[in-house]
Image (cartoon, rainbow, N blue to C red):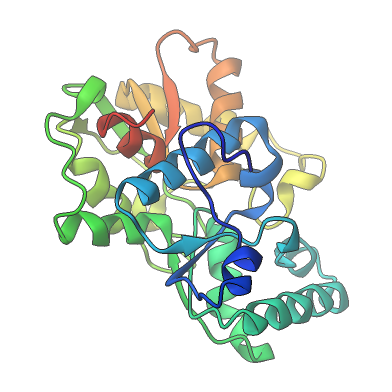
Length: 267
């Protein structure tokens, strides 16, 4: 990560060399590290952490894949090998709390790593941002450019149905002074974006329509100006859906961290 553009993401190794252990490890994830679109979400979240003087660090080049794609694709051996390598790194640095913007990383850290000896407090950034708002640290007064906009939230499968986190992202969005509108399929009945379960890495299965194109019909029906996501893969699929429907000029797709950062004047 480039630390030169008005944000700073300390490396865990550098802090360890100084004898320091940060309160939070920000697990960036593959999309947050390498996907050009999702890098902006990583930067937005880091800027929020910087503004609040949160004691955090990232692993940088020491961050490996969590093993989630291998696990979902059925390669248990590869998953366990990757997980054990990560657990060794995390334990070496004495990591206690992990915050990540990826529901897939969140889910596997929270639900799969304990079985291999990786016990950590794990938070998705939606929950972490809600905690910061509840503590009065993030205020978003006025809502910025989103004031009065119609915003709809797309539930990530691995955040919602897999971990029952539905309210935290909505609580964050409520602070934007925008009009939060629900799609007809939301929360426990939310429609998948079509990427989960390693589906993004394979050809689409037979059917009448791509799942994310069908999801865009829900967005259009809700007459939303903005689709808020809390998952890199949902963001990718929703953005592609907007392009397929030729609505790039009317509908924008943002991660909730980007919305908070913009409302805070950090973008």
